[in-house]
Length: 285
Length: 187
Image 1 (cartoon, chains in turn red, orange):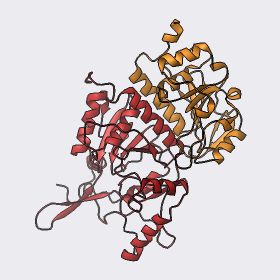
Image 2 (image 1 turned 30 degrees about the horizontal axis):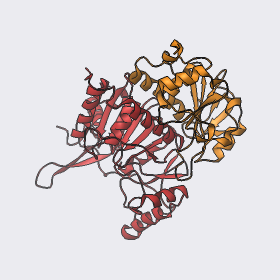
Image 3 (image 1 turned 45 degrees about the horizontal axis):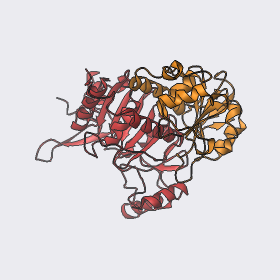
Image 4 (image 1 turned 90 degrees about the vertical axis):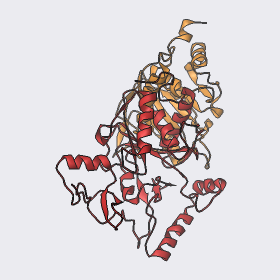
């Protein structure tokens, strides 16, 4: 049941048109951050206002909506955004990755490969990959226009000089189609290889920072690295305690006050589907 | 005021523009794919697909250039009533609509600046027909290659050469639409 006091999907039509125009320009120039007039949303900045606005602009009546927060369907952020669109758009919702047509995500890409026709909407806190190296927007904009990305390589090099390897483990910068360096949002670098050549459309919304950017399907996305220090998609060296999966991204969970810990899949839908299919990990009850 | 001016818009704007935008977005994100978008019945000679794109994306913030035959009283009034988009010449437009011959030369449209490549025009090209054969397309959004009946190839190769600057195109025929963003390589 929709709350009819709201327009379909909450935002007014003029706002949606503005966001839609930004999305199309973002798709035309993959990896480039398109400025947009982000609106106040009925939730605080940092809770996914950018993602919510992008989802509201792309959603149709026929969509099935899924929200994940760090891979989980049942965390506060995911539950509240899902119910927000249930109320304001009346769309069907799901926790099954394969059944969803629009997936809003905070900091993960689902383990299950996405398909054509699906749309993945990222919540982005800081869209500018160069921001922590150069705080001035006027300068970072110039650096993107001149393809001046040397500073980013210096940062990765300093990682190697200090730690012996590239210690950046999330929000790992990528280069899109050999042109723009892009922040993939704070996904673990384990997920970086899935950004490229994905069948689904990927849209990135940063509400506070007022930027939208996009990756069309099958876009060439390369994680920055060095010949002698190639990019490596890393994860905890364990199997999931609940479903036994060996190739999924894991959360480390402290289970008691005596140093006990277990590793479980961060993607709850992936883990539950495996458990239902009979897979068992060493910690499963 | 004519009935033709007042009718032909979306009857349920929020829902119909969302469905139309999905078609436009899929067309832009997957160059060469032909999508169907419905809901608009603009006055002739504008196609229903071009009308739906304008209803979905244009408003008082988007200067619009009507080229050639489309720059007629019926279309002007329809656009004014349904969108309020200010009509302008090609050099200051965000959107332009017309047939291929009327839209040229492409050099008169804004292609964005190196710091703001998004500030470029989107051209809606009215076509007699739209078929998945002709020029070969490759680039973002295309798995290997795609083919699309383009009015010519040289202009689009030249446009791609300006990347990340450049114009973005949508081709419309009847209720069908295909996209060709600047990122697509045309052979």
